[in-house]
Image 1 (tube, helix red, strand yellow):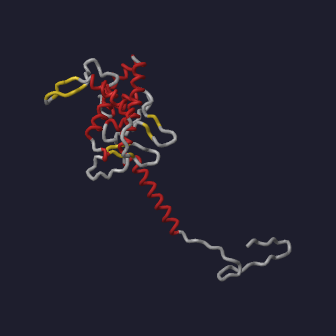
Image 2 (tube, helix red, strand yellow):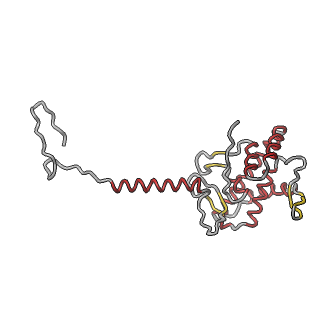
Length: 238
């Protein structure tokens, strides 16, 4: 069995974690981390959207309805890219494009249409019905709802884009100081730290190495030149 990808969940919200399911976005060859519907389900499981038994149910249902699962995967990718453009734009001080908001609004409308009031420990909550098994679109709906919540409640000044040249992941800075810089310290942050360390090491080594200067024959301190022992001996180049 192929080893599952471990998704980075450092975006600060579910929708931003979905947006970050493309690795090395700014590189010439970005890596798609949701190549199959099964990967979308695994992302939802790791993100806490579905339990492990529900994830297995979704994968079985996708096997019975492969065409439906493929369409939902395609919609999830379209939503992901719209979410990325909306929040990356806000992080840069740009308003969202109407076309991207339309994608989000369309998926949000379908997600909310499927919501029902469900009993909870302290009253009621809005949830998607799971009596007949989780719907195949559940990961998509959860991401759309999260995006709406971030858009309507988060401080846009706390939205940031990772400055690493090949990364570009977006995240919500929830630190008290608001000084978070990297998508994740164990990813781009540690790589940048290592590059600074090696640059200092190389700079220190270059500064401490003594320079060797060539001295002309006959100059002070230069070894005496030897005369050739005969006409057949070649001259040594100075």
